[in-house]
Image 1: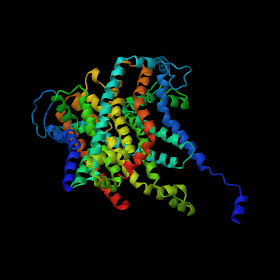
Image 2: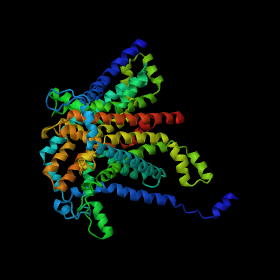
Image 3: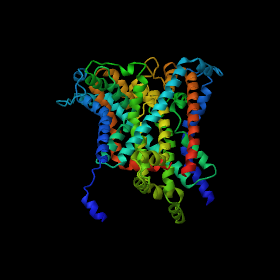
Image 4: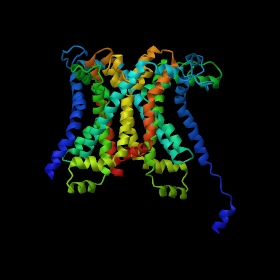
Length: 293
Length: 285
């Protein structure tokens, strides 16, 4: 019996593990290797340059700019969709008329690609006939043609709004699923004890939703670290690198300037940042698991 | 006594449902507006849009933009390329996830939890980290500017999420079912394909939808691995066509809508499995 099991484990796991090792783990490890070289992407030979690339990171002004932008981007891309998604889920849980249609409307943007979402929002921010400026003109009654995406002050934040619009639906669905496990008799007790709706949400529902929050935040971290497509299409990292994130910077150095060795060094840093966040996160997760089982 | 009094006092008006409905309605309009903008652009002439007429209700439907998109042979090619990549990669990643997920759920071994965690961790890393080595690998195999690397990478990168969801689903299938089948003389492969998989259709539907949407909408990998227009997929193609239709906003709008149609239709069709599936995979993760 045990021998058969051993045979089946190997037989079933061989292919998935092989593909995973060959195309994910191995490239991950060789990224570390290339970060110590000056490979340019074309020549088959390259030199080993030691820590040269990592020293260069320290003097790369654009790298620190990218770190700052990535921090802003991630903080907003985690907070906004989480808070919005939770609010929507709480409203929808009241089961008013048409909540099914509302649900579909809020979820729909998730099916669109970052490229399409970017395109849509480029039009909203369009200075001459974009919706945002049109509305502002209607309200103030005077001409307004601020170029949201072409100004360093607003470009990154404009993209964050577009991103949140797309991601909110995902956190909403997860919170809705979590809300179904909140016991209704507990809420009835709250009503009998005379709790206000706000107290009920703050002190009973949100703590009970912790497992959902864990999932929502994890997904937001994953997705925001990968946030590249939408920046690529909306601003390309510009203007004046004001929306340049680490992922954008890495792409520019590797595939526009063909400094693949240096690009690998940036990606190693990106990897270490991801690893740290995930590590911290899993530690928190363990605590949550200990409490909620 | 209580009955009498409650009959006498008229029911108090509860303002909450109306307030909540109104708030939701306003939010829904706000949420729909961007999408409606694209819809409107696709049925208007470029001249009308440039004159600032995008956000008004159209007097008449202008279908020239759609005609332009449908008659462009490049668009046909982009669509075909995307299908050629997306369908096999969706199937392959789901199948590999089923194999690994089944083993982790039903045939655990010493260290299998650790191995499972390593596989799941693959989900968290930014794809940029493996970009350069994969580019070099496929370049040395002569596969750059073919559809192969895109298929292979999506299959591999799909393994973590597929394994996670399938393992969690298989864990809910009672062990007694497997044991009964084995006592009847079935082997592990038969248990998987004849007993467990038929029970897993909702989970498979969720997974296939997720993977299809993600691969169809992807931009980074086709951007890196293809160079000629012949091999571009739809999302990279849209960006390329922008050069051709620089100010033809209406055509761009029609193109975006058509490119989003497959994923929208699949989502609407599988919607009922979807929300259930998110619960299953995510909350008890």
